Amino acid sequence: MTIRNDVVEAIGNTPLIKLKQASELTGCTILGKAEFMNPGQSVKDRAGKWMILEAEKRGELRPGGLVVEATAGNTGIGLAVVASARGYRTLIVIPETQSQEKKDFLKLCGAELIEVPALPYANPNNYQHVGRRLADELRKTEPNGVLFADQWNNLDNAKAHYESTGPEIWEQTGGKIDGFICSVGTGGTLAGVSRYLKEKHPGIVNACADPHGFAMYELFKNGQAKSTPGDSITEGIGLGRVTPVIETAKVDDAFLIPDEEAVKVIYELIQHEGLCLGGSTGINIVGAMRLATQLGPGKTIVTVLCDSGSRYQSKLFNADFMRAKNLPVPEWLEKRSNIKP
Ligand code: PMP
Image 1 (cartoon, rainbow, N blue to C red):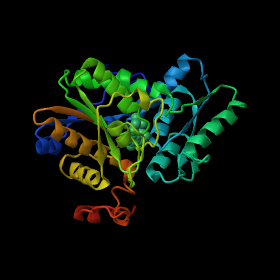
Image 2 (tube, rainbow, N blue to C red):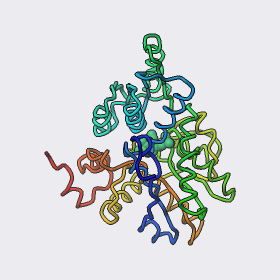
Image 3 (cartoon, rainbow, N blue to C red):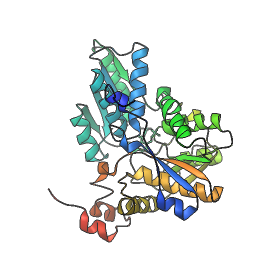
């Protein structure tokens, strides 16, 4: 397909890129699915596309309708990109702690933004509950329908990866794949890809890479969704409970990854491999290296390059921010970051 009729058709079919240093250090072939190359620059474009197109098929959205979602940012961007191309409006509820770059990009895409304090899920004013209440309220007055995308509960989110990311990885590797690993925000990526690959190749090892402070490591390692101690500067990942989406995942193992290691990998990649990626991708790649070490040399492991590092210039690539978080700051970053306009 050389000409795409619109941006929606340009979502997916991303390249699989060999990660040189990670492969050399482990003796395996570690490949990254370049999701930052989607039009909205993240893996969540696929979820946005599927959640909107499936809702259209069910007749839940009509031209001029409103898409509402609670999101750390990337799902909102994916939804806004697709909504814009298909004639819908977007209203996004986002925790105020998320990066300014994501918020600015959402506004550029035409989304209306409601920023709320970052509160735990158990709090009734957590962004996910605010989003649902707003959608319920707006449904009473919106003439053309309201879609609450509801990515944690909406199985179309995982379907996107079962029908696109998984098959693409299988084809791109020619079925020569021994392991797949990624982190969990909603679990859409892990659920959809792991289920597809397990059906194709029951011997594959699917694994979850979890940052500190969330419950997926304990869930997949010991069967109980219990949060690990600590926290993480990564955005868009970390889930503290079992949801309908994550329940469909086919996962064999889990790894708990500290931010220090994830950040070092991200810095190495921009310095030596020309890849500018976000923090969740660091968690994924360190996880892929752990899985590679466990499986032994010669294996092929695939992970996900979730989003672009340009989304985190003010955080991950900001020496002052990183120092305040007691995370490693390489000398080159001291010199290159904080470039004022
Ligand atoms: N990385 C980033 C940067 C994200 O925004 C997200 C989605 N919130 C993920 C990873 C995880 O994707 P999923 O929701 O499919 O688990």
